[in-house]
Image: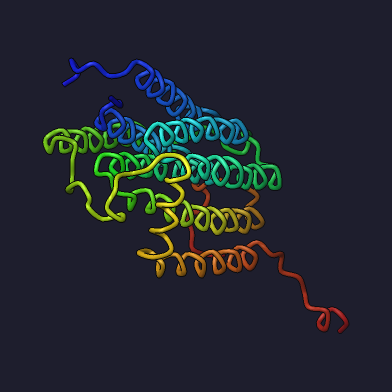
Length: 101
Length: 189
């Protein structure tokens, strides 16, 4: 018998917590994006676990779509980081304190 | 509940994937150098792929490694190297007083709440499905067939929209990251 779903769900919740903590405390925009990836992966793990528990492939299809959205998000986000770096020569989010370009 | 004997290999796989996931995640959290953080992100993603594999999501495990570890993290590394970002750029100052303890407390509170709620509902939301063409999750190539069936029939509209989303995001990224040059006509004047 496979490991109970609860173990994977707790693991996913803790991974989401680590990702959130990183997102809230790190300064570099690039590492904040990595923490968003961790959070997305935690949710993906939850989807897959429920897909197994409920024998429904819809959960796995959701993960597929989450991955597509994550790829698009990273592409645009890193382009924004590059554009900001051109102006500020830094990726620290603390320096982005004004709306002025 | 724990007293039920679970197969030892399954437990071993779970423990290994948990170690990979949390080792990598803590690495992302701790490392100052973004390159090291990206590499430990790969470690974490391999752990997630292992957890997928242990839960009959074979196709997603492969995609996790190919797309995430192979493409997205490489994109991260490309940007890090391209910008020449170094850890020296980030002094460890803390403009917001007490941000870290507050963030940690909030995260602990939220995660404890989520786990409590899930334990209270016996770790199950929803009901076992009778859809997905009437049979349980298949293994191996059957898994790919099931996902393909679902994506190209039930979720066809969403699939088409993701195609548009990818095109738009690529165009947007090119537009954002492009260097603004004076046009040829203006240069001649």
